[in-house]
Image 1 (cartoon, rainbow, N blue to C red):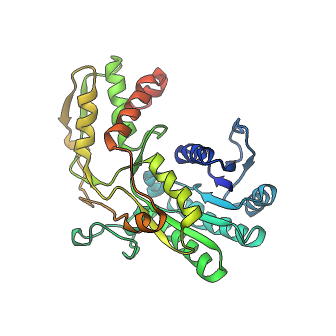
Image 2: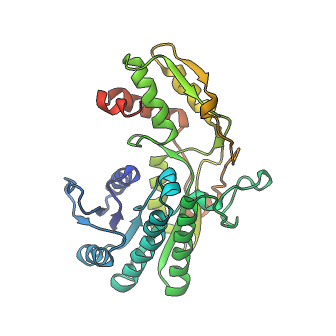
Length: 319
């Protein structure tokens, strides 16, 4: 299949490229204008989600049979401080992508990646959450992704496009930047091992439980959805099990080459709005033939080894 990966330069995009290559797909990627042009034996197109002409140009130049829309504002904290920007990029940007699809290549299939954040704070009695749960986002990021999800559903129902919505839960793996739990912990361990920080990790509330899946399993789900996803359908991608954040921390501490003390820092303690968040992947398993395969401990080990091998200046960013 000829696949255009919109937002191919990010954490998930790099893994999506490798998934497409492993399946023998012809792929092209997009990057944000102003970024260096990625070097690869494939076409690359500058694309601004808020500039429809750049979207139509990429579509017309490559003529993909399938599109995986990964681009957007993915930082929850940044969206909290700049909600209008997040909404425009994630919601309006998705509308521009789908309108370009409608006008240039309406026969192509599209996978639109939103987020499990669209569900908001789901009551414990409704866990694991399935795709029939109402969208009730509790953050500006979640709201922007819920709007994108609704736009994608409308494109399938109202415009007759073959659009599939993916709602991934927490994912982890090599290449993930700081600001997420696994690289944040792993980078601190790497700094401590190098003697660049005291052997103490100060933490807040670690009781929250989240559903973690390896990013390589996640992109396999996206690729499956291009082939087998139902137009207009939404699919959770998750393990279906929740892991306490405390267990993630303990894993990294146990792998450290030097003793590390964990201290509770009351200044870091915040109320846990959602004590547990866990998804139901049954629909993806049934319709896409998908399930999470990689054990979580293997994913975390790879993240730690990546940070151990990182340049000193990179681990210093975690200070």
